Amino acid sequence: MTALSANLVASKERYPNRTALRCDDLQFTYAEFDAAAARVATLLERAGVEPGDRVGLMLPNTPAFAIAFYGIMYRGAVAVPMNPLLKAREVSYYLSNSGAKALFGTPAFAEEAAAGAAEVGAQCWLVDDDGLMKLIADLPEHSPVERGDDDVAVILHTSGTTGKPKGAMLTHGNLSRNCEVSQRTLVETGQDDVVMGCLPLFHVFGLTCGLNGAVLAGSTLTLLPRFDPRKAIEIIERDAVTVFEGVPTMYSALLSVADQVPPGATRSLRTCVSGGAALPVQVLADFEKAFGCTVLEGYGLSESSPAAAFNHPNRPRKAGSIGTPIEGVEMRVVDLDGVEVPQGEAGQIQIRGHNVMKGYWNLPDATKETITPDGWLNTGDVGRVDEDGYFYIVDRTKDMIIRGGYNVYPREIEEVLYEHPDVAEAAVIGIPHDSLGEEVGAAVALKKGAAVTADELRDYVKARVAAYKYPRLVWLVDALPKGPTGKLLKREITIPTTESTR
Image (cartoon, rainbow, N blue to C red; front, side, top):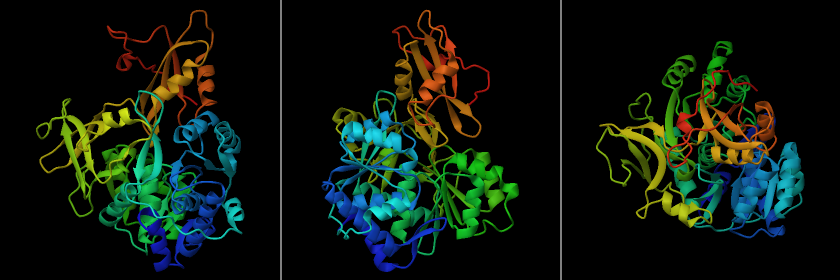
């Protein structure tokens, strides 16, 4: 037995009675976690899911996600994690694009999950924690199916600006090695640690560094389905959390309630990890002062499993830097021809190592554009490296918007706007936002004689995409700026001074 499933089996054998998963009063020991995952594997087998088949996972941060995920691994199938907030049209795309045979969805969004699954003919189980346990209660335990390092374990949908989301194929080798290196050299977790599980598990950061890292180390993962800073503080104190992993907006939110934290409530914290977007230097400094805990900032992307570089705990940290490459990973800065630029000069960051994805699902041309023949991953991010080998992000060449740690792809939202009968042109851009990092905005030119309002357009999109994606600010323009060839010039779009609402 190899790769991800082996980690849960090993921790079950070493620490059978240790709490593996917790969500308030609901707890699972490693023995119970393993048994439940093995029964999910039987459920999948009886539903006709074979090793290598894809299974959608559209659940919030509760034990059901972890159990279903490892059940998929035990069956030797491929997990397709999805945001529970997706609408039916998005669900059906993710399932049809990956060819998924089944979906675990949450009853909280039953209509969207069921409708999306029905459209592609996928088996759909709508389960919360209790529902999943009842579903598998009488099933026998399934032995883990052998999988190799090069076998795909997860398909994560991601995108740039040139079309629909692409499925990044992450192998057992990608995820298990990235998890092992991150756990051993960065957070240094062990069986006595308690890891805060507030990062979405459907996102590669939460999946690799949170769930998989805790399972590998035999730690306890205490879950928070919806992030709230006061609830997070309560959990940190209650469970004696030692490792906190979050995105910058979470650190800002915790800072906003720092003056309300009871003395000693967070004394158990020893390491905090930040990723998903750039952490403002002032936020880092203020957080460390308020909570007395070191924050390690890093960098990665879905295509790199995700960790690529970090400020390591045993090395000097540099404010504003994403640190140095992790063990087994190389990074460099190149020009447009792929030639490495002199130290200190800006260029595109490339990554090579055990963390680089196998490719995009069923998209060989996109894979060739992203991964060079000698294995370098083009990140699309502009950066530089200093004399000590520390990397810095300068800018993004992609138009992707990072809103509160979530990726929003402009082209996807523009497609929805163009479906409105009154829209002639639309451009979606990121707007700087103090707490979220970026907010989603849309400039729209209407067809002649159209009378739709900006608010109506915003609500139109809101009804068709996940809540974190729709543009809070929509404004109408006579025409969008274009270059000599007719190409839309997003950088020349004027953003209204009116404060965004709703």
